[in-house]
Image (cartoon, one colour):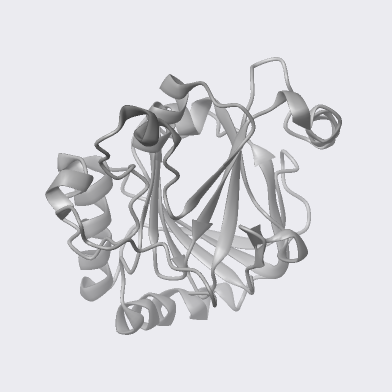
Length: 258
Protein backbone atom coordinates (compact mmCIF):
# COMPACT_ATOMS: atom_id res chain seq x y z
CA UNK A 1 0.00 0.00 0.00
CA UNK A 2 1.35 3.39 -0.86
CA UNK A 3 2.02 6.06 1.73
CA UNK A 4 -0.77 8.37 2.75
CA UNK A 5 -3.77 6.40 1.49
CA UNK A 6 -5.71 3.36 2.46
CA UNK A 7 -8.72 2.00 0.62
CA UNK A 8 -10.01 0.55 3.88
CA UNK A 9 -12.87 2.31 5.64
CA UNK A 10 -13.83 2.30 9.27
CA UNK A 11 -16.07 -0.66 10.03
CA UNK A 12 -19.24 1.28 10.75
CA UNK A 13 -21.26 -1.20 8.73
CA UNK A 14 -20.91 -4.95 8.62
CA UNK A 15 -19.39 -6.77 5.66
CA UNK A 16 -22.79 -8.27 4.88
CA UNK A 17 -24.32 -4.80 4.63
CA UNK A 18 -21.59 -3.53 2.31
CA UNK A 19 -21.04 -6.38 -0.14
CA UNK A 20 -23.40 -8.26 -2.45
CA UNK A 21 -24.06 -11.86 -1.59
CA UNK A 22 -21.75 -13.26 -4.26
CA UNK A 23 -18.77 -11.51 -2.69
CA UNK A 24 -19.39 -12.56 0.89
CA UNK A 25 -17.06 -15.61 0.84
CA UNK A 26 -14.01 -13.32 0.88
CA UNK A 27 -13.92 -12.10 4.47
CA UNK A 28 -10.52 -10.51 3.76
CA UNK A 29 -12.11 -7.70 1.78
CA UNK A 30 -11.51 -4.19 3.02
CA UNK A 31 -11.79 -2.48 -0.36
CA UNK A 32 -15.41 -1.42 -0.67
CA UNK A 33 -16.29 0.09 -3.97
CA UNK A 34 -19.93 0.10 -2.89
CA UNK A 35 -20.88 3.38 -1.20
CA UNK A 36 -21.39 3.58 2.53
CA UNK A 37 -24.92 3.99 3.81
CA UNK A 38 -26.05 7.51 4.53
CA UNK A 39 -29.09 8.93 6.21
CA UNK A 40 -29.31 11.64 3.56
CA UNK A 41 -30.05 10.54 -0.01
CA UNK A 42 -28.17 13.49 -1.51
CA UNK A 43 -25.11 12.58 0.56
CA UNK A 44 -25.31 9.04 -0.74
CA UNK A 45 -25.49 10.29 -4.31
CA UNK A 46 -22.24 12.22 -3.93
CA UNK A 47 -20.33 9.72 -1.76
CA UNK A 48 -17.01 8.61 -3.25
CA UNK A 49 -15.62 5.16 -2.37
CA UNK A 50 -12.10 5.13 -0.98
CA UNK A 51 -10.44 3.27 -3.87
CA UNK A 52 -12.34 5.00 -6.70
CA UNK A 53 -11.99 8.56 -7.95
CA UNK A 54 -14.68 9.85 -10.31
CA UNK A 55 -14.09 12.51 -12.96
CA UNK A 56 -16.58 14.39 -15.11
CA UNK A 57 -20.34 14.49 -14.88
CA UNK A 58 -21.60 11.00 -14.18
CA UNK A 59 -25.32 10.23 -14.53
CA UNK A 60 -26.41 9.08 -11.08
CA UNK A 61 -27.88 5.80 -12.31
CA UNK A 62 -24.79 4.88 -14.30
CA UNK A 63 -22.52 5.70 -11.39
CA UNK A 64 -24.52 3.35 -9.16
CA UNK A 65 -24.37 0.61 -11.79
CA UNK A 66 -20.62 1.11 -12.18
CA UNK A 67 -20.08 0.72 -8.44
CA UNK A 68 -21.95 -2.58 -8.55
CA UNK A 69 -19.94 -3.83 -11.54
CA UNK A 70 -16.41 -2.76 -10.53
CA UNK A 71 -15.13 -4.17 -7.23
CA UNK A 72 -11.74 -4.28 -5.54
CA UNK A 73 -11.05 -6.63 -2.62
CA UNK A 74 -7.94 -5.71 -0.66
CA UNK A 75 -5.54 -8.35 0.73
CA UNK A 76 -7.26 -11.12 -1.17
CA UNK A 77 -4.01 -13.05 -0.91
CA UNK A 78 -1.38 -12.69 1.80
CA UNK A 79 2.40 -12.57 1.32
CA UNK A 80 3.00 -16.36 1.56
CA UNK A 81 0.23 -16.96 -0.99
CA UNK A 82 1.73 -14.35 -3.31
CA UNK A 83 5.10 -16.08 -3.04
CA UNK A 84 3.48 -19.45 -3.72
CA UNK A 85 1.87 -18.17 -6.92
CA UNK A 86 5.11 -16.53 -8.06
CA UNK A 87 7.13 -19.68 -7.37
CA UNK A 88 4.92 -21.59 -9.79
CA UNK A 89 4.83 -19.10 -12.67
CA UNK A 90 8.24 -17.38 -12.49
CA UNK A 91 10.31 -20.30 -13.89
CA UNK A 92 8.22 -20.25 -17.07
CA UNK A 93 7.99 -16.46 -17.38
CA UNK A 94 11.76 -16.11 -17.10
CA UNK A 95 12.13 -18.08 -20.32
CA UNK A 96 10.04 -15.51 -22.22
CA UNK A 97 11.01 -12.12 -23.59
CA UNK A 98 8.98 -8.99 -22.94
CA UNK A 99 7.02 -8.14 -26.06
CA UNK A 100 6.34 -4.65 -27.38
CA UNK A 101 3.97 -5.54 -30.20
CA UNK A 102 0.45 -6.76 -29.54
CA UNK A 103 -2.05 -7.98 -32.13
CA UNK A 104 -4.44 -5.07 -31.39
CA UNK A 105 -1.82 -2.62 -30.03
CA UNK A 106 -3.34 -2.88 -26.54
CA UNK A 107 -0.27 -3.89 -24.50
CA UNK A 108 3.41 -2.90 -24.59
CA UNK A 109 6.15 -4.41 -22.46
CA UNK A 110 4.52 -7.68 -21.49
CA UNK A 111 4.89 -11.42 -21.46
CA UNK A 112 2.06 -13.85 -20.87
CA UNK A 113 0.99 -17.43 -20.58
CA UNK A 114 -2.04 -19.53 -19.75
CA UNK A 115 -2.21 -22.36 -17.24
CA UNK A 116 -4.84 -24.98 -16.63
CA UNK A 117 -3.13 -27.13 -14.01
CA UNK A 118 -1.81 -25.58 -10.78
CA UNK A 119 -0.14 -26.80 -7.64
CA UNK A 120 -2.81 -27.72 -5.04
CA UNK A 121 -2.13 -24.71 -2.78
CA UNK A 122 -2.44 -22.31 -5.71
CA UNK A 123 -5.46 -24.12 -7.08
CA UNK A 124 -7.12 -23.42 -3.73
CA UNK A 125 -6.44 -19.68 -4.19
CA UNK A 126 -7.94 -19.73 -7.66
CA UNK A 127 -10.94 -21.64 -6.39
CA UNK A 128 -11.54 -18.73 -4.01
CA UNK A 129 -11.51 -16.36 -6.98
CA UNK A 130 -14.02 -18.52 -8.82
CA UNK A 131 -16.27 -18.70 -5.77
CA UNK A 132 -16.15 -14.94 -5.17
CA UNK A 133 -16.38 -13.65 -8.72
CA UNK A 134 -18.06 -16.36 -10.80
CA UNK A 135 -20.33 -18.25 -8.44
CA UNK A 136 -18.29 -21.39 -9.01
CA UNK A 137 -18.11 -21.48 -12.83
CA UNK A 138 -15.11 -20.09 -14.74
CA UNK A 139 -13.02 -20.99 -17.80
CA UNK A 140 -10.43 -23.70 -16.99
CA UNK A 141 -7.46 -21.77 -18.42
CA UNK A 142 -6.09 -18.93 -16.28
CA UNK A 143 -4.34 -16.02 -17.98
CA UNK A 144 -1.04 -14.84 -16.47
CA UNK A 145 0.04 -11.36 -17.65
CA UNK A 146 3.47 -10.03 -16.67
CA UNK A 147 3.74 -6.27 -17.25
CA UNK A 148 7.24 -4.76 -17.10
CA UNK A 149 7.88 -1.70 -14.94
CA UNK A 150 7.77 0.48 -18.05
CA UNK A 151 4.99 -1.57 -19.63
CA UNK A 152 1.50 -0.21 -20.28
CA UNK A 153 -1.93 -1.56 -21.05
CA UNK A 154 -3.57 0.92 -23.40
CA UNK A 155 -7.28 1.75 -23.30
CA UNK A 156 -9.35 -1.02 -24.81
CA UNK A 157 -12.64 -2.88 -24.52
CA UNK A 158 -12.33 -6.64 -24.26
CA UNK A 159 -13.68 -8.66 -27.15
CA UNK A 160 -16.83 -10.63 -26.38
CA UNK A 161 -15.49 -13.48 -28.54
CA UNK A 162 -12.97 -14.68 -26.00
CA UNK A 163 -14.66 -14.52 -22.63
CA UNK A 164 -17.93 -13.77 -20.90
CA UNK A 165 -19.26 -10.85 -18.91
CA UNK A 166 -16.80 -11.05 -15.98
CA UNK A 167 -13.06 -10.99 -15.44
CA UNK A 168 -11.29 -11.16 -12.08
CA UNK A 169 -7.60 -10.51 -11.54
CA UNK A 170 -5.18 -10.91 -8.64
CA UNK A 171 -2.55 -8.13 -8.66
CA UNK A 172 0.94 -9.28 -7.64
CA UNK A 173 4.23 -7.43 -6.98
CA UNK A 174 2.99 -3.85 -7.37
CA UNK A 175 0.23 -1.33 -6.79
CA UNK A 176 -1.19 0.20 -9.97
CA UNK A 177 -3.96 2.46 -11.23
CA UNK A 178 -6.64 1.32 -13.65
CA UNK A 179 -8.57 3.96 -15.59
CA UNK A 180 -12.03 3.27 -17.03
CA UNK A 181 -13.44 5.80 -19.52
CA UNK A 182 -17.03 5.81 -20.76
CA UNK A 183 -17.01 5.13 -24.47
CA UNK A 184 -19.28 4.16 -27.33
CA UNK A 185 -19.12 1.80 -30.27
CA UNK A 186 -18.00 4.48 -32.71
CA UNK A 187 -14.83 5.39 -30.86
CA UNK A 188 -11.54 3.60 -31.40
CA UNK A 189 -9.28 2.34 -28.60
CA UNK A 190 -5.93 2.83 -30.31
CA UNK A 191 -3.98 6.05 -30.94
CA UNK A 192 -7.07 7.66 -32.47
CA UNK A 193 -9.03 6.99 -29.29
CA UNK A 194 -6.30 8.49 -27.11
CA UNK A 195 -6.38 11.63 -29.24
CA UNK A 196 -10.17 11.86 -28.92
CA UNK A 197 -9.93 11.49 -25.15
CA UNK A 198 -7.22 14.14 -24.94
CA UNK A 199 -9.14 16.65 -27.05
CA UNK A 200 -12.63 16.00 -25.70
CA UNK A 201 -11.91 15.21 -22.08
CA UNK A 202 -14.40 17.86 -20.95
CA UNK A 203 -17.17 15.80 -22.59
CA UNK A 204 -16.10 12.54 -20.98
CA UNK A 205 -16.58 10.94 -17.61
CA UNK A 206 -14.29 8.31 -16.18
CA UNK A 207 -12.98 6.69 -13.00
CA UNK A 208 -9.51 5.89 -11.69
CA UNK A 209 -9.33 2.69 -9.63
CA UNK A 210 -6.52 1.93 -7.19
CA UNK A 211 -5.42 -1.73 -7.48
CA UNK A 212 -3.19 -2.48 -4.48
CA UNK A 213 -0.69 -5.30 -4.47
CA UNK A 214 -2.30 -8.64 -3.49
CA UNK A 215 -5.81 -7.34 -4.13
CA UNK A 216 -8.47 -8.86 -6.39
CA UNK A 217 -10.48 -6.80 -8.84
CA UNK A 218 -13.78 -8.04 -10.25
CA UNK A 219 -15.01 -6.28 -13.37
CA UNK A 220 -18.29 -7.24 -14.96
CA UNK A 221 -21.17 -6.18 -17.22
CA UNK A 222 -21.25 -2.38 -17.69
CA UNK A 223 -17.69 -1.83 -16.44
CA UNK A 224 -16.40 -4.25 -19.09
CA UNK A 225 -18.43 -3.28 -22.13
CA UNK A 226 -19.30 0.41 -21.71
CA UNK A 227 -15.88 1.59 -20.54
CA UNK A 228 -12.39 1.28 -21.90
CA UNK A 229 -9.89 0.12 -19.31
CA UNK A 230 -6.15 0.59 -19.08
CA UNK A 231 -3.27 0.36 -16.62
CA UNK A 232 -1.63 3.77 -16.39
CA UNK A 233 2.10 4.12 -17.17
CA UNK A 234 4.47 4.39 -14.24
CA UNK A 235 4.97 8.16 -14.59
CA UNK A 236 1.21 8.77 -14.89
CA UNK A 237 0.14 6.50 -12.02
CA UNK A 238 -1.50 9.10 -9.83
CA UNK A 239 -4.33 8.43 -7.42
CA UNK A 240 -5.81 11.51 -5.74
CA UNK A 241 -2.63 13.45 -6.49
CA UNK A 242 -0.39 10.81 -4.89
CA UNK A 243 2.14 9.05 -7.12
CA UNK A 244 1.70 5.28 -7.04
CA UNK A 245 5.04 3.47 -7.20
CA UNK A 246 4.24 1.09 -10.04
CA UNK A 247 6.92 -1.52 -10.68
CA UNK A 248 6.72 -4.85 -12.46
CA UNK A 249 3.18 -6.17 -12.13
CA UNK A 250 1.84 -9.68 -12.60
CA UNK A 251 -1.89 -10.25 -12.85
CA UNK A 252 -3.52 -13.66 -12.65
CA UNK A 253 -6.80 -13.36 -14.48
CA UNK A 254 -9.83 -15.65 -14.47
CA UNK A 255 -12.71 -15.36 -16.94
CA UNK A 256 -16.04 -16.99 -17.56
CA UNK A 257 -17.27 -18.51 -20.82
CA UNK A 258 -18.70 -16.25 -23.56
